[in-house]
Amino acid sequence: MGFIHRAARIGGILTLSSLGVFLAGEGVARAFELAPPPRGDSKILRVVTGRASEAQAPGVGRVLKPGTEESHVYVDRRGLERRVTYRINSVGIRDREVGREKPEGLFRVCAVGDSFTFGTAIEVEETWPKALERALRRDLATPDVEVLNCGLEALNLPQQAALLANRIVHLEPDLVVLCVYINDASGRGIQPPELPVRLRSRMEWVSKLGLTSGVWAAGEELNAAQRRMMSLRRSSHLADFCAHRLYRALYGSVKEESYRRDWSPGSEGHEAARAALRRIRDLARDEGFPVHVVMYPVICDLGADYPYRAEHGVVGGMCAELGLAFTDLLEALVGRHRSELQAHEHDAHPNGTANELVASYLAPELLPSIALASAAAGPDRLHPTARAAGRER
Image (cartoon, rainbow, N blue to C red; front, side):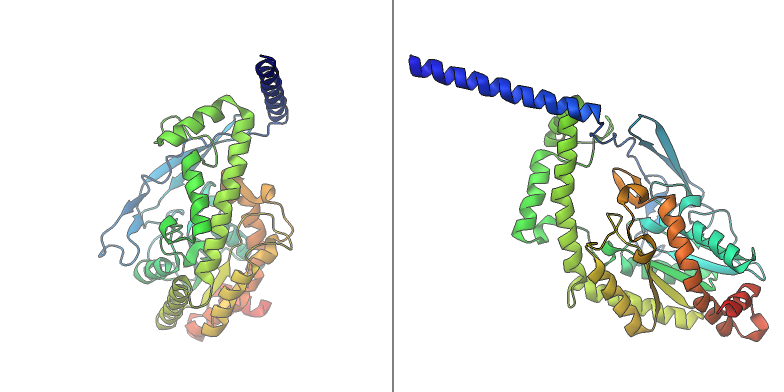
């Protein structure tokens, strides 16, 4: 009996100690608001985007629906809601109303890219195309330049090439700025069956534990593991904090290695990206407008240990090989912390601050491309904006 009593006593002490540690941790988590804010209403882009036939959007598969809008609610740590509205104009881009035919004397820049260009989680005036428009007008001292936001979320480079060829050329761009992101060499995103064993096991743990970046809205569709985890996270700030960190560690490491594999020379993603850039170069030559490629960095801690410097170099090397102008936007944000630049704790798209920094850095870099557009147009069609760019050179 003595042994049983001792074992029970030790067990009781361990239980009380564990409970004490948990309660202390819970108190710290609540006192310092360590738990992330809820994800808010995640019903995003279900109205403004839609599937399209191959004839409607060859090689893209989706389009923005003209004349539609959708809202998304973000919640901060104080419980305050921020509503972002996505309005699509009559020509099917997220921008102010414009005509397909370009007004005389206007220099039109079309910004092409994925959700970083489209502006997920921010208002349209906070996107980098609109920030660039303001920067160019300021630097060139003329209102006769516009930058249209032609982004569409979740496009890889081949799809961006198809969108440019089949839709954006009809807007008569004088210059196209193509924004590349680290996942643009991915064909179908992160597919667990195609991952190495060590990465697949991490994804399996994400699934088994029901991990997500944060607590989802009550109406969101969840599996059994996610429902159990959501229930725990709603009742405990400490559990919410730990689950958030664990998700970022597991899923983040899988994404990082997957992106590197996609851009490695000779991989399927690498070759598809090269072919897409070649197609864009040839289209631009045939249609008579220059293309300037930029690469937007991943919004993380942008210090000396930024994980994708080599991949940025790969994109720059491709552009040099193909004769395309290239600007690495990492230099505009280097040294900044993700908290300054991220749209929301659960959404690592750039915010308005990041896009203003990028636009101010990019505008002078575009002056040679604007001057090139002037030379291609010929002396009889010289834009005032292009003349100004030529003087700036």
